[in-house]
Length: 512
Image (cartoon, rainbow, N blue to C red; front, side, top):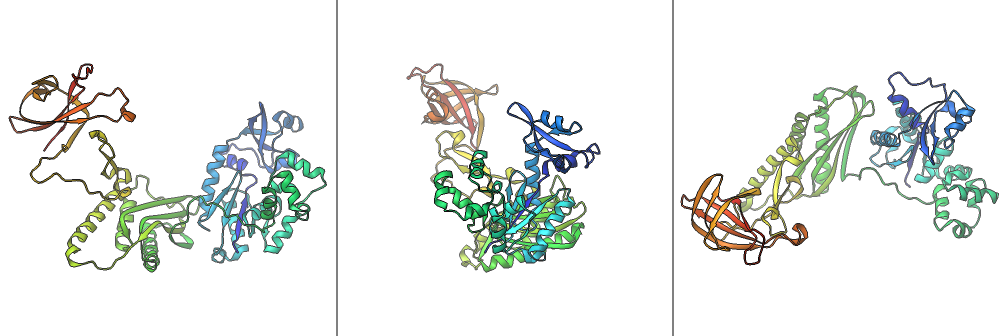
């Protein structure tokens, strides 16, 4: 049986607003509300406890609220800031379990199956999460049950707590109909029928409710009562391998942090060896005592589990950070995850291929270090493109994102079909041709005249109409060599025989 911990933060927007104020926030005992414009009126979006005790409620117009409570202090709501804060709190809660999901607008759901014993049991885990959030300045109510819907309903509409399956079902049956989170008209229809609690619905035939409120209505009741489990979708996919350390006292010294990271790499190696796998992507998460989470990732071209290589890559990453790793008051947890792993056979190959394998391994390690130091987007390799136009025949992609390709080689004794240097865009040149649509005899480039000794072509290329349009002229390419032995790649854009408007010549590249 799975177990889910729901965290409800009833005053998240107002507590967020207060935490952002530099000493200018109103007294906590004073009524305060956040407002937003809705249906052409300023309405209350969120209230602090003092405002709720005065009888105000979300959705009330600001004019009505001020009529009831003239001293009400207000500020503008910011739903985007609330969402970003909820994301940061979800990242903070990943120290308890990697399966953390948002329960918007003001809640989180954690799949804590198999995790509670690490934090003193289920009651200890629920208490610890609330204490940690309180230390960050946010009030929270926790409920732990066997389904996420049951846990979140108990957290939002009861006092919370840790519930066994039977206790969760009994407690959920006493919840009001509002726990179903239905539209107002449906809630009104149920209340007019004399139904007040979830238990009132559970003891009646499901078929009648399905006909009136939809086929999903009975399933919603079953989920609230803990009888039907629908798994949460975590913010981050669970990794293939994960190891972590929690500390009684936060770590702040860089030497200690790297030592712990090395221990985690050794543990991950053992885990990957058992599964005959190697990692392609490794992610280290540093959970700071103040709730901030910093993540560092390294990628490798080939699957690996070598601790020396991984330690070197993480050391390079830490040294090359533009924003250095700031421990603040210290890290109270470190985690090493392997989000992407592949099959990896470390058996010795045949002797004939040993030299090639060693060269590939050294090249891979060099590229891994360059990628780690300079960034994924700055270490590139060329891949063949599915196009005839020279500027689209290849494209640069991150070396860690693509496998090496085998490029076609020219036949022995034949010159290369494409130059090593391409101009983007092609450079215009002045050409004297032997015939209107014939090869060039001489051309001027950068104020210097080049007499052509040999010319080979044309190679006719018709640009892709879906990219360049139907009006793009045909190109005739020539490989030419001047009397000084320099080789160029020229093309004529347009043909006289087809009546193209003013065909022009361009230099597209230089051969070695």
